[in-house]
Amino acid sequence: MSSKRDYYEVLGVQKGATKDEIKDAYRKLAMQYHPDRNKSPGAEDKFKEISEAYAVLSDDEKRSQYDNLGQAGFSQQYSPEDIFRGADFESIFGGGLGDIFDFFFGGGGGMRGGYGRRSIKGNDLLAELEVTLEEVARGAEKEIQLPRTERCATCGGTGAAPGTSPNTCARCGGTGQVQRVMSSGFGRFVQVTPCPVCRGAGSTIATPCRDCRGSGLQRVKRRIVVKVPAGISDDAQLRLRGEGDASQNGGPPGDLYVQVRVLPHRIFKRDESNLIYDLSISPPQAALGADIEVPTLDGNQAISIAAGTQPGSIIKLRGKGLPKMGGFGKGDLLVRVNVVIPDKLTSRQRELYEALAKESNVGVKGRRFMGL
Image 1 (cartoon, one colour):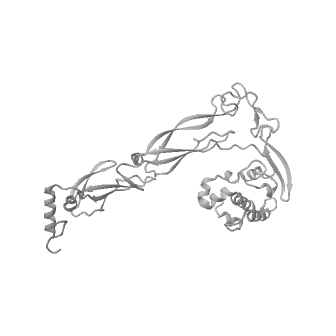
Image 2: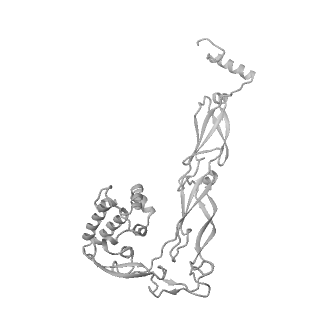
Image 3: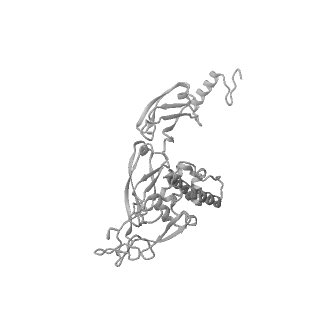
């Protein structure tokens, strides 16, 4: 249901508008497009769009998230139900959240009745997982252990002791809600509140389960296998649907979000899908060239150092990096050449370096040559 237009544009207000300005703008538009008043095609869709915009911009936290993340990022964080949950429509319509939920998400009769008890998704969980660069290169299956809420194994989640069953609440008839019909300038509305007897559960328990004490839920430690895709980046987040906490009223379980941390490697540095390896060579090898083996994630590989190689030169080994996410090829291994100057010389090495300096007609400490 999420609007594709900017919420501020939908309500016709500036980004810095106050709460009162947002409420006034919504009230005027709601009077114009409310389906009880406006029977023209598209009026109902317009009413839903402005109501969604108001639900976000009238809530400080949601508005801040929207301003920071933008429309696309905000829609990934909030479901349509989350957007409307907690929104203040009562001061405008004289009704409550139940009115808006049923109008937008069903429930028998739009904004004028037919309210049922809604299941609520369980809590989402967050866990961290450390992986090595080798595991990034090949992909891996890792096991994590975390505490989460699950349905009680003893009572099957009913909350009632084995051999007994919950009783339908006599006050609300099992709906978990009580209703009060109200009237306003928009028409008739139903104000819905949780049943005070069963607290919204729709049932009462005479003999609670001993293990969960009537809640129907237990806290357990669970081992979960996480499939790490090849090429995953550091700080990426994997979503495991349905692996979060169980719902308190029979709704779907929450999700598990796994934050991936790629451990530093002792040899390689990572640059997206490329790897960087620092190779140290001696001055003679840089000047004369050499054949050297360097490590890769697949084993050692021979490379050729060209004569006259300069410090900082890069030798590229194509396809020896990390897989690119999505399976589109692999990065490269970039061998960065460092020429290491010896800090101590034997007498023979000193003689040879002095001879080279003389042949090159360059001055060195303690020696001067022609032309300098």
